[in-house]
Length: 143
Image 1: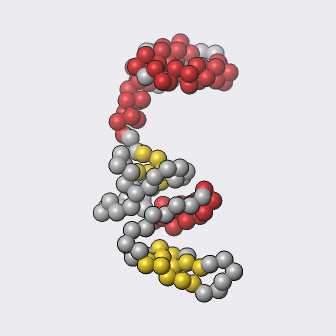
Image 2 (image 1 turned 120 degrees about the vertical axis):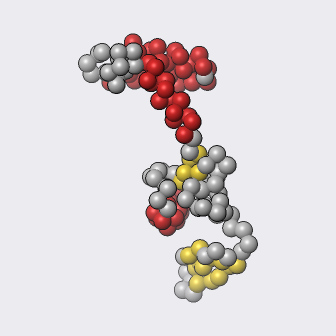
Image 3 (image 1 turned 45 degrees about the vertical axis):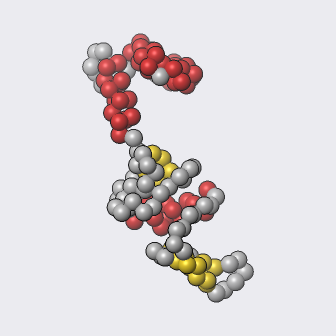
């Protein structure tokens, strides 16, 4: 029903009355459906820093973005770790791969990008092979 700073208000199935549960530390663990209902509606919408529609954004220490006293953590399927360095690094890969500087990657530029990333991060090789097949499949103008 409701989460307060030091207690929960909840209702048992098939009961009309609410109950109160005091706590010092609240560890919320729930399934996907309940999580979406509670977290995304009641929590994420109250925090302007939460812009992801599929998961709660945390910092690299799993602290929920938007909670300024760092008192709320999100762990597991409900969350995603914000990693601006990763995004900047990936953007630089694309900038470097765009040889003709037209803001798009041709097939040949994409192949070179995939090779560069695979050399630097070998764990990506299998995924990039799949991306290569998808590029060929969906490249409408075959450029």
